[in-house]
Image (cartoon, rainbow, N blue to C red):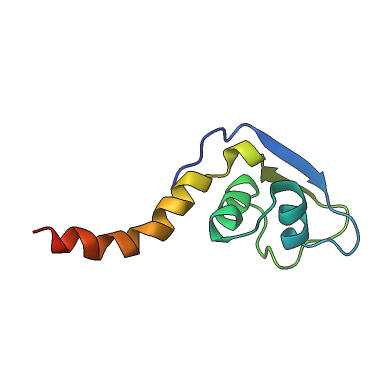
Length: 88
């Protein structure tokens, strides 16, 4: 998956007790594998996204950069395949 608007990101100063999950849900409304991959792409130095430290500055995608339509299409694809196979 490629994301649109990669330059439209949000810079976050990690506060004590914050996790990527909390930051993502607060800023983007969700947290999933696609968002985690985008966060890793924006922060190549982030070796372990489960262990962020207070004071670290991380970048997350803006809400407009998250491919919600692409994610929905991927979720629907498995259920669409049998219907297509039956049309042959």
